[in-house]
Image (cartoon, rainbow, N blue to C red):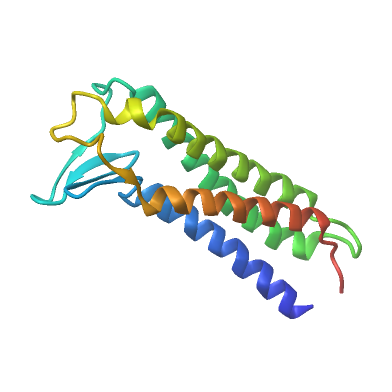
Length: 167
């Protein structure tokens, strides 16, 4: 039982780490001379970065991605704290339903963020406000980590729903 508990805790912390990395790191869309994320665009040749502001044509889409990724990370962290509390407060045989709901909300938020970015990436990177050409790129590892975090949070949300507290 202790091994299962350790696995669940490590799995949840891994999910949170993936969400933090994919939200913060500058690699949602990368090219040979640039990298961009939901916060800024960086020129790798000159090591200069430019914040994505409301002057960009698709700023509302970027804001939606920013908000849902932040919410997903917050839900995942809160879910971990609720799991720890429920671990001590639940009676034997009860399910971790509240933790599951919070984790599934995290899953939903990261799915929404990655889906919006997937759908709107062409319009996002054709904006004339960029100081360099960013339309010729590809999805970066932060974008991939966001989809992996989606899978991890989905699995852990279902796992918490099935899991019962034992002695």
